[in-house]
Amino acid sequence: MHGKPLVLFLSLCLSSLPVWAQVEVERPYWFVLERGKQHFRNGDYGRALIAFEDARNQRRAMYTRMEQDMIAVLSIAEVRRLGDALDLVEKYIAERGRIDAARALEELYYRVPRESLENSALRTLEEFDRLKAYPEAEYWIGETYRTEGEPGIALRQFRKAYEQRSFLETPGFDTDILYKIADIHRIRQEYTLMERNLLEILTKDSLWSQDSSTFVRSAMTRTVENDGIDRFLTLYRYDNPVTLRAHRLLGFYYSSSGRHSRAVEHLMFAFLIQNSIFIDDIIRSQYDYTFTTLNNLLDEVMRRPALASYFEGTEYYKTLYYLGTSFFGSGKLNAARYFWTACAGRQDAGEWRARSQAQLRSPFIEPAVELP
Image (cartoon, rainbow, N blue to C red; front, side):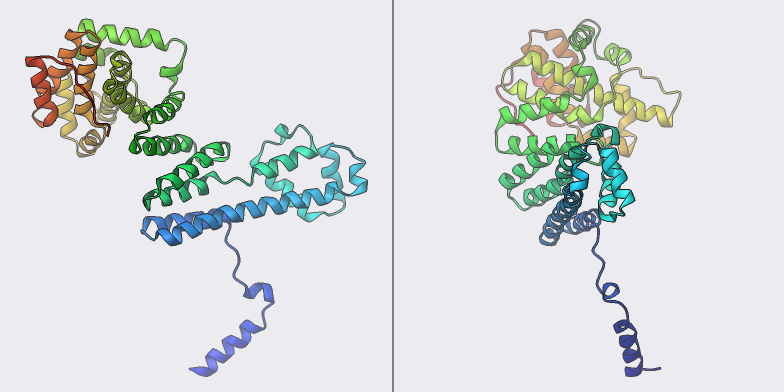
């Protein structure tokens, strides 16, 4: 067959298929979300937004339909006489071949631990209602609006996503959402709200939030004051990159508002995390590496492109400089000098080297910090 006969033949074959086979199969909500992410990465924000909203609506519709399937069964007089016993209702569904309700329960048990339902049929309806939430879609809708210059709408979406965080499928994604919320407040100069969200992130920092944290911070501070930076980094390690930025931003914020003691605590944690990441990464490729001095460590970091890139992204020298000014503002001149000296001795520290040198000549308290 050639040309038109072939086209005609294919058309006849397709027309003979059942109607359901001729209709494009609806993509699952998670597939639609991933398609939206692809549009977003390609800069096609209009199509991305449509996909994210479709994904949210599809998930809501799916669990609404499952909720209705269960309501239909629970409304049957014979089932009502069984009371709230989920096991009896499930047995009825299996014996009577209620396929839709059986599929709904199968999906529910996949999403929710069966024991958490406490054998309550009515609890299944509550869970189906909760499962209509789709925080990932809410987040990406917000991210699209943020990228398009609509921070107010984005903030509402991020908050909605965070409220629905118990349904997030990616561990730790709730922290990413909090950072987005904090960033919008920072840009809008709503610093109290920024602070609140950053502190919430730090509730996930076990060393920071545990009962003994005050003792640990005091011990760390004493080590710096009495023995210097090199001894501090010899004794302590804390590799927690998730909370690094929260500590750093809070440290800058407290420094700018004159709360130097609080700034010291957060910037010291940020400094410790930064260097712990460097040391641990070096040890992974050079098992016999031993930390000796901060200067030697930074030389090693600069020889490794991946670490050097990460170094720039963590505002290392800015952290070093303001840790010095915060110690000075807290009345700890010796500790302040340790950090200013370390920063002043680095050729690559740029602005922060010059500012550290000025502090070493004549120490002063910075009047303000421009938050990043």
